Length: 272
Image (cartoon, rainbow, N blue to C red; front, side):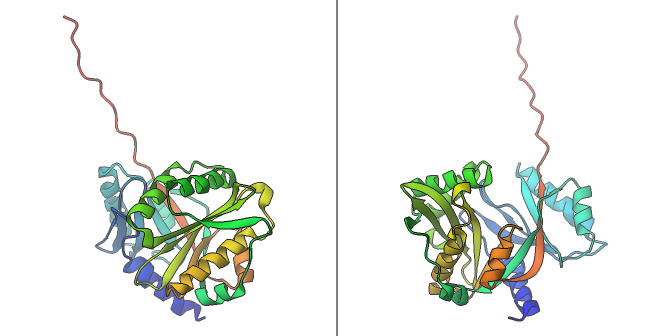
C-alpha cells in the first residue's frame, strides 16, 4: 500500500467529494468547506476544508452560523494533515471542544476477509435488520461504552428502514444475551467502507470477539465490491487493527460545537 496515495484517495472520495451518508442528509461545498447537514440524529458537520491563515476564521464563523440557525450540534472532523496548521487552536478559540484523537487506519478488505476469525464457541453473529436488533446493539453500546446510545439507536432504525444498502450491523449473542456489536457504513461509489462502533461488554473482552466482528464485516465489504476498509481507531482498538494489517495514514480529532440554548420567554398573562 502506498500510504500517501491511499490517503489522497480517501481525502478525495470520502471528504472532498463525499456523498450524503444517510436518509435526509445533504452534502454541500460552501467556499472551501464541505459539510453535511441532516436530521438531529444523523452526523452533522464539516467533512473537509481547504483553508488558509487568511480564510480559516471566517469559514469557521460561517459554519457556526449555519448549524446554529438550525439548532444543530455539529462536528468539525479535523485531520492532522489539514491546513492551516493551527486550525485546531482556531476551532477551540471559536468555542469548539476537542474529543480524543484517533488514528485513521485503512486496509484492503479482501486481505482482512481472508484472515478469517470465527467467534468463540457458544457465540453467534446475528445480523441486525430491524428495531429489535438495534435494541440489542444499544444494550451492548450502553454497557461497553457507558454512554447513552439513544441517538444512535434512532439513526440506525431510520437507516435500516430507509437506506438498508448503506449500513451493515451485527450483534454477537451468547446464552441469549448480546455481548458485542458493530456496524459498517457502505458509501456507494467510493470503494470505501467504514467500520464503526465495535464494542464488547466487559466480561467478554479479550476473547477475540472484536477481531471476529472486523473479519465478518470485511467479508461483507469485499463481497459488495468495496476495496478499502477505513477505521477511526481508538487507543484500545489500534493495536488489534495493526496486528490484523491495518495501516495508519493520519490522525483525526473531533471538534464538537454545541449552540447556546435559546432563552425561553414566558407569555404575558393578565389577572384582571
